[in-house]
Length: 120
Image (cartoon, rainbow, N blue to C red):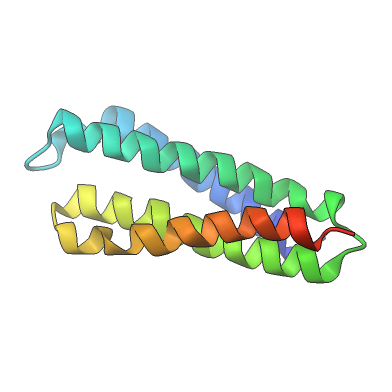
């Protein structure tokens, strides 16, 4: 089994936990606002979508190890950087923690481009 399948499955499970917290616990966080709810939801959508993609990279790119590793690494970095920094920003109410989102977003874009460009 490829590391991307394991990482993707674990990340997908984490996105479900984050969605549950967003629905049931986020409103109890100090300084909660509807804007923060929306930010959490956007982070969670990106988290789930890219985690599922990461899970299914392995069978799609089984014979293309370079593409699999580059795309998998970039998607993993992107999920953590984009969604993780937004989750942290919203949960802690510290805007400085959201500064990783643009880097994570670029990593997600590069991950998807690597799938398009590195496939033979």
